Length: 280
Image (cartoon, rainbow, N blue to C red):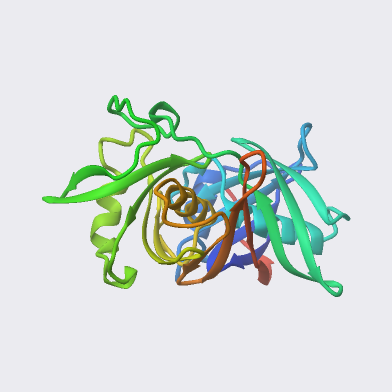
């Protein structure tokens, strides 16, 4: 099976043109995403045909579980489809499990410089995130959660997938993400598990962050996570509309349009291509 490896601010994916192809994608993702033993990636992205949009994206995390959506993944899929001439336009529509995403290619000369994708309207209701406990307030901001004997304040949002964001006054590299990440991800409060972000406000237009992705672990970047950080920070009054999210893998820009859609902008590039020998 032919594949291409792409990355977007360090969030790396195995992209497969799966139009007309069927495999055990969960098992393939588990095997191919293994670093050192497989190709190595945070997830597998499938390009499929769609009756509702130009193309359909399916994404499987490294643990084999299918994810609802992925901002960095959408940008990588867009880059792949443009460069491989699957789509011959600077705008494309992409079907995901959460709906139709819009993607726009930003060019410098004849080359793609950045890609902007629409991530939809954020959801703050407890049942839409979802949260297991009945919590009457909406949005749910600075909710005290006890994890490993320590209370951390979390703000919740769904960007099509669940997110819990904590804001810290210290540098995010000092935050014990490797310890807290899996505990928050699998906490009983989150029936579908959750992505978890630790963030620090640097200015009204700048936030530094680290991300723990559900089903993957710590990643260098996360598009939906960047959006979750930006929208919860805005709800808390920390930042303005246009925000740069500085992750270990690079900078993502998030802003909200006039109708409430969250737009995510950043780079994406193809690293290499090859053939994967294990077919499931």
